[in-house]
Image (cartoon, rainbow, N blue to C red; front, side, top):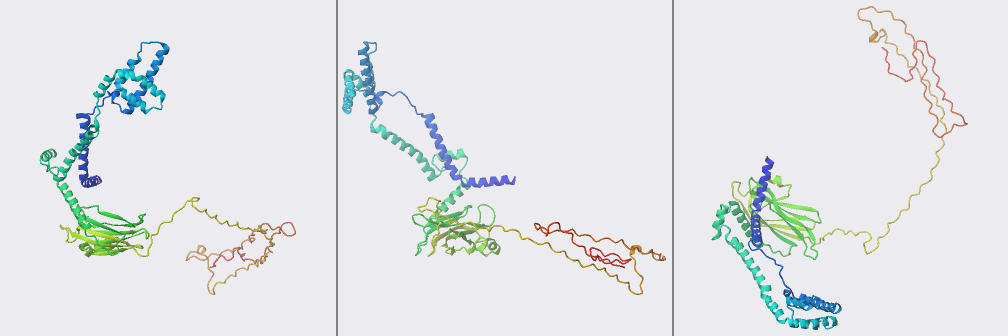
Length: 514
């Protein structure tokens, strides 16, 4: 639900900003609908297909006469070859000459224009007696449709267009001068139809537009005249109520190619308080250098924001803080550009917020120079292969590396058998004098009981030492003298004494005798 309310509020803000344009669009649409209703409903245009040959132009009347002359000759030839028929070619020719309003003078003029065509001249000569017989009727047909002349052909449509333009322009001028609700006669009627006068929002928007236009005109007259003309110079004005203030300008050289150097601009950096319109407490001016690929920003802060440590700490990430004051200047520098920012005009707003905490009007001047000795670094032009004026140089070819042939593996002799030293038995330590031999805790008798006679310990059966498997010679080395390698000799074992434990093949196991 909150999201829906937020969307509705945004739509209301956008609609409020576009209300003047929507109102103009409504009146334009109303005029289009009214014109279509007038043309197609009230005074419709009628097209009739009752034109006659006499209304044709001279070119088409000449074609009509040439066709009639050829047709009249054909009819006469057919009568001469086939005899008399019910069809009378003279009457047919008279009818067509009267319909087109052709007289003997027209036939003579056409003969003179086509004197090199003997066939056509002879055909037209045969029509002259027929044209003389209906001379009066042809002239009466011409008088029935007189030539409209220049007045009716040009002036009447032009005057009609001008009259329509005046009729449409007059209400527009009246609306612009008086307003739709202040017209002498139409105003009260429109008020009753719309049930009210202009809303407070409409009047506020109109006042903001007028104030913005006046501020821009004043700022344009306060440009600084420098000894060294800058590459470009802009004026940016913020007015209270412009919640979307964000001006940006392109920096270009005044050369034939309009070389692009970068961009600069000014916009809202931070606001204070709540509600609409926004209370802007700091703006930011910035410059972007194309050659440096970096953006340098200074924050123009109000007196309250500049003296507030919390606000300064929050805006420190945006850029260097600068106290906004009339006539204050600051400089932004990049690798190849230098911009001077000057506050041309400013005024603080009044309200419930702390004094000098937000701007009501702020105009800054941005003048940009190119540093001396710095040239514009243009990106390299990539020429497709095979399209240049010079042939491409062949790539140097590196000979393949030479590898030595593989060498046979070296022959190793079998290792000689190693003599292992005999393992010495671990000497047993006698118990300390005056103390009986100790027994393991598991075999000790309970306290208070006489000791029992223990049978003598039997010696453990002697176990042969484990044999280590023979690894054999390295792979690929044959035994010397043929055959197989004999097993390695075993180390001799020392003689075993009766009652002595054989030595462990694993060495000292850490056994402790108690």
